Amino acid sequence: MSKYYVNKFLYTVDRDPEYLKRYTEDPKTFVATWEQSIGPKLLGNDVEASTVHALTDAERDALVTHDFVALFEMGAHFFLNLTLFIGIYDEPYFQKSGPLAFQREFAAKLQHWRDRAYPSVET
Picture 1 (spheres, rainbow, N blue to C red):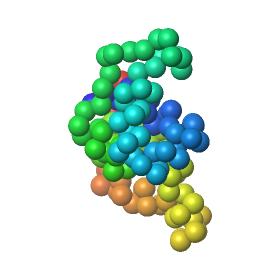
Picture 2 (tube, helix red, strand yellow):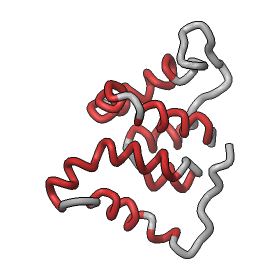
Picture 3 (cartoon, rainbow, N blue to C red):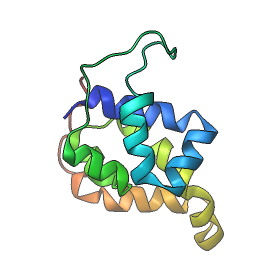
């Protein structure tokens, strides 16, 4: 897993309202666009770009399907993973089930990790 690249995706998308909207509305297209034109940028400019990083098929699939459990299990940074998906799901879950509803679901889906060591987030 390219933990760096996945974490860069989570961080970048979570901090840009336009990216978050595009990712929410059409994840497959946005992940492909991000991987090809947004992710390679270094220092947020158009002059410097990296050709080294790429998502694996499993990473790409997890990002496209919003599979935060798979991302966690692959070693995505816990906080970046959680905050991005709060940005996507908090309001709909709140409307349906009240405060912290998505956070409780996130925790419930990761219950099988309760007695195990968390995956390393080292890059």
